[in-house]
Image (cartoon, rainbow, N blue to C red; front, side, top):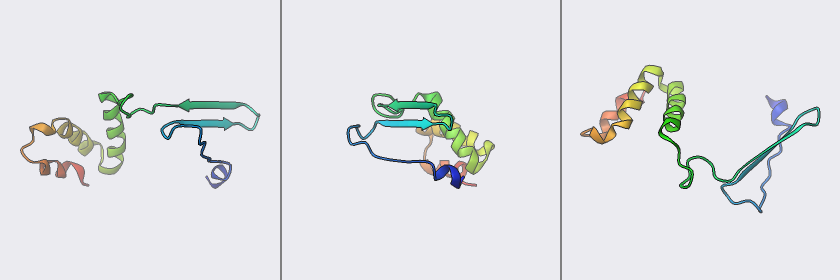
Amino acid sequence: MASIRDRIDISEDPSLSKWTVSVTLELNDGTIYSERISHPTGMMDTPMRDEMAQQKFDGLATEVIGAEKAAKAHRALWDAEKLSDVRELIPYLVK
């Protein structure tokens, strides 16, 4: 991984807004791929859809607390307004 890390250059472009990201990838054969995102998902003008939030939570939580607890936590969090006390979430969110 160090060999890859050593070939990555990161720089700030003051002409871009603070939310804009531009990535350029140059392969060994000289092929160049570029992508620019001006409005990342999760911002006010590009909110995350429920399905995207669910996938992100499931992917991250499963790594930490396991699939079964992640699924229970997911259901509890989507119905959090029905809980009498937010502390009811704690058992779902710890190992």
